[in-house]
Image (cartoon, rainbow, N blue to C red; front, side, top):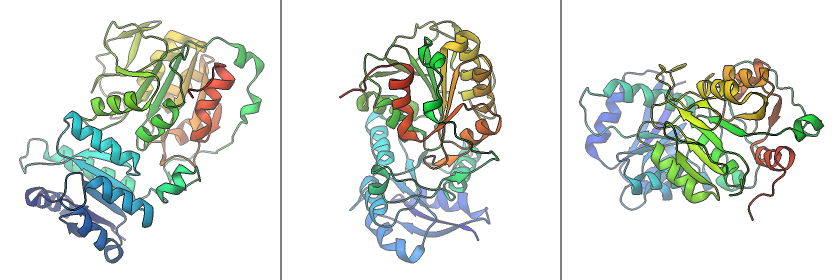
Length: 364
């Protein structure tokens, strides 16, 4: 059965481009093209889409309101299409993600061949991934009820209880926390970082796979949502305790020595730059057993081999569990390698960091 896609987009030009992009893929069927959020909402029951793609700015009902209605009544995986990466627009994009949308993609604004193939391939890939994501009403998600994620990979999920963290591990001094994520990652990162207090004793570094142009919006959104400061790292900058760092767009995040960010003119790893594995391997080499590596929801294998490097030098490794992952790909691959020492629901990761490893209270 083809993947059924409903699009909400008010621009006739963009409608034509999106139709053309989807038309050459027999496994994808366009079942509706709405010009407003209200029109999309009325089409939902008849079209029965597997995936909804929505613009933000539309007459009558915008993308945020549409997402809220869909997630409250007939939840579907939602892909946000944004034509602009200006500060106000990216802020809106992350508001839609916070309301229950799963991922974001730059909207194709002309039919030129400049980046046509790249955008088309990214759109098709995201639709295929989202078609396997099971979602429930946003209310149920906020209440913390589990959902069944998309599985990619082959791993045996053998959970080591948090109570089994050895006294030696609890008493060790840690100097850095490194987190990697992909699909579903912005929301997962928000869930963890909002629980980290401003006086957290070490720096936190993150790699998030996200479409080009949205990194600054992600950083600004998290900075506004969290007690800790969230910044983009620069070469030669010294990492500060209680600050969260992301690499610059299209650059790897590495260290030259403890606490100092380095330049890494390396090619993409597994198709990704920045790469979670490149970050984890640098962290393992520089910090050894005094680091914590966390791998969150996401498609593919990036981060699995890097997490194995952290485990091999004696650091602590945590993978998000299947039930709370939007896409159980990256964590599953790490588990398959035996690289994940602890497999935790998303809601337990920050408490383990704060209470078991760093002994600091969460922000009030």
